[in-house]
Image 1 (tube, helix red, strand yellow):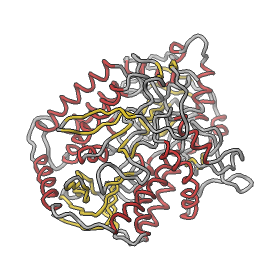
Image 2: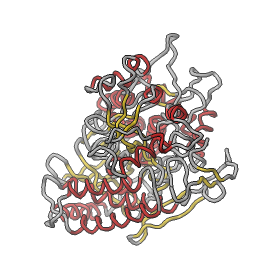
Image 3: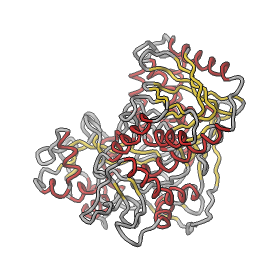
Image 4: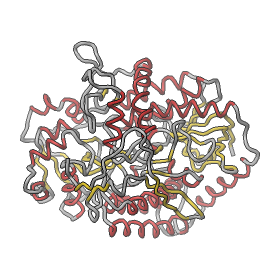
Length: 579
């Protein structure tokens, strides 16, 4: 059993992880970075693509009236007040410095004809503040950060999956992982640990996440004693998810596509109220990519989801998005989408594409404070795995800004703690227990193939817990997860080819149980959380967090009022799909 001792352990090598490692190293501590894949090319940040993948920052080039304060207000109001306003304020104000850090690191953000950084409008923004390089902004950011990591005295372990955190008397001292090349356990003992493991999209049938994003960080943190927050809020939007993964964004909706099902029927009109036209909905969708109930754009997602869930989608679970009637206008009016998709063999002028509502981002996560600390001493979190900084909806571009702002904070504060700490005394016993559990799972000799179990579980979660949610659908999913839990912990057939998937399944049932419990508990509709049986946003009763913790092998819900020191909502009850 290989053991590596370090000051700061960073788990995850995407945008937040690389930024945390760089910041920690500045303080002169020993830093170790572990990656599930390869540095610079694995994780969510470099593997996401959209029409204009953005870093949201109030520079004032798009409109001189913009400012960090306006950015902060947009985060709070778009998040529908169910977020930590102090964390939101930190993102809005520190995004500027972290943006210029990236410029200094060599990220080629595009500029206008006057040499100023190009800033476009994005979801939930009052002013244009979305900076990018095109569809590959995340990729370019991680390339720049990974180059700095590689040139620094940071120890890098690639192809290592973290399995569990080493926790001694309520304090984290690193993690135990498994080498994905030879399946040997590896122990990383650290004075402080930073979780930057990304999201959980790979637990759903349709997502734009790379494979392996199975909610590992949320599950490990929950088992370690940390709390999860806002797990009912996720971003779902119309995406291509087969062969290539791509968010279908604003310019493509402005071209007025035809949406039709497997029978060739154009179906959208059937889902619209009499006072809303298809043109109205497309106008809203062109400025609101993710599914939300705060304006009529969400009707597109409800229509596509319902067609698929009621059996009128394609055999593989999609509907058709057709722009063949537009022709060469696509090249001029949607240049970034055209370039990206044509490079992947999709000519929108000649063929429709298959789309589905796909999970794009989780707005909740492991509860953190302003120092990126979790409830567990010595454990920090940043990026998508962290929670509290985003609310029911998230302005476009805030994810990339968030991972840089809190990635830097997590690295800095983790290093400060490490400089004034010593290692625990019982880490060896704890890590040996984790290794023993891995070996026990590796010897399962049941009748269920892990790959098949995972695919079935992903179908259950997509159909019951994405766009349209009801008490009945959520209870059905909860029952299914319980049934799968019994299979996963007792009746899997595990071998060297599927051990990693078996370990993923353990995380999937833990994080999905928490997520479903949060969705069931919030008896209203807000942002991307649409309860068809509670079709109202209720600011009188539901401006509060759903917080989840593990206690005696059960999940406990706490309802906590967010601090509203800066902005306060006006109590109202709002019907869905209303501006």
